[in-house]
Every structure is written in C-alpha cells, then in structure tokens.
Image 1: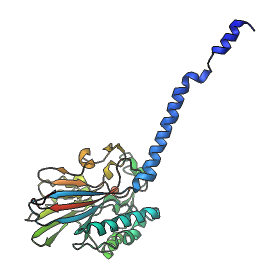
Image 2: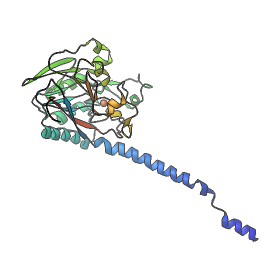
Image 3: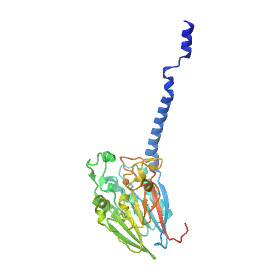
Image 4: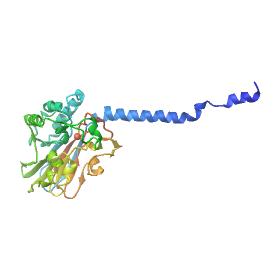
Length: 313
Ligand SMILES: [Fe+2]
C-alpha cells in the first residue's frame, strides 16, 4: 500500500462524525419532552396547593373565612388515589382552617359517573354557614377528546349530564346550589350577600338581564366563568371563579391559552384589584379526563379571609 493511501486511512473520520452533536441534541430534546410530559401527567396534577388570600374591606368587622375550590371534574374511572387526595385535602383544610363557609366554583363532575362520587368527596363538610356551589359547563355536558380542539370540533355532539341527578346528589349532601339567586348571610354585625350565577345563564347571554342586588353588606359573587364575573364590576366586592385551570399548560407559569377574555395575568395571579371588584380565579382541583395534564399550573384550594381594615395583615 502506498504511503499516501495509509495517511488517508489514518486521518479520515467516520462519516457520521459531523452529525454527532445534532444526534445528541435530538436525543436530549426528546428526553426533555418525555420528562415534561411525564411530569405534567403523573406529578403536577396531584400537587394540590393550599393558597391563602386576605382581602380588607370596610364592610367587614369580624374576620370571615371562606374555603373556595373549583373544577374537581369527578368521574368514576378516576384513580382511587386522586379521589382520596381531593377528599383528604378538603377535609384536612377544613379541620386546620375552620372556615365559616365553603364555596365551590363548578365543574364538579366530568361525566355522569362522577355524580356517584359527590357524597364520598364532599359529603362530610359542615361549616357553620353552609356549603354553596354553582354549576360549570362540565356539569351540563360530557365532553370528549375532540372537544378539546375547539373551535374546530365545536359542533361535535356532546352527551348531556343528568343535571337532575346531580342536583339531587348535591342537595342530599347538604350542598346548596345557587342558580341565579342570592342568599343573605348574617353573622354578628356583618352581612354578606352571596350571589351565584349559573353557567347556562351566562352562555345564553341571559346574565345581562340579571342585576346583582345591592345592599349594605359585603357582596360576594360566585360564578364558574371569570368572563361572566367581569361583567359586574360595580355590583360585587369579590368575585370567585374557576374554569380556566390556570391555563393548565403554561410556559413556566405564564398561561398560553385560557379561552377567556380575562387577562392572562388575572388568571395567573392571586387577585387583580379593580377598584370596583376583586376577581379571584382558582386554578381548580382537577382536570378533564381527556386532557389530564398540568404544567406549572398546579391544582389549588384556597382559604380566603375577608378582614376589617383595622386588622393587621
Ligand atoms: Fe373545568
């Protein structure tokens, strides 16, 4: 063999040598995507955060504590561990924080099968001023995978939820449904007017005909859609909502899609004080069974204290 040929063999690198960094980068990228998927599927949806919020009001003299959660999305095939997590988190927070009232922001169930779990998860909650709920869109319709890709499949037929059975289960377990109605809660010298607006009323545009009753007391609004709440800026002091799941899949905490006219900042942060009304949007406890992922939008349950302006925070 000639000398020149030998040098050629010694100094020639394998064909794929120049592509190695790209292959490695590709493998690392794939690993990152798989890790993010596993994290958002198996880990984050079960990391329920207990959030503590305080709101000062001249209309409050003695601390009034609200336990608020939304969007549990119950269904029978839900893993037993998850059902126990919801039930135990609610009960433990009740025990530790002793709220005066419990409010639920809708999407209690994800399918008809979830109605049978109402008693198991919410049946043992007895705060002094009661448990109140509004219904969400998933309490009226069973969505499927295609409905996650709205508006492309907006017209794909949905199965209705047996709302009569759902309402019966709520009532049997001491949960009062507020469907376009107000209750007045008196405690000592404080008066709280709690109004619940139904999801179907909002979706059909009928909420514009509703005027929240005024009055001297603190005005609390409970409704599933934040978009509904912002239409009453001067008619409530505090609005509690759910629905958006905190964006569910976010860019490290910054929501990408919320399907809401409410600003992404309002969805992400604790409260956005507009002078007339404070809006609080829960990230929800659960997720739809057809899209069971959460990324930097951990589930939550909130302890909201209404306090007098004199109380030190
Ligand atoms: Fe929901």
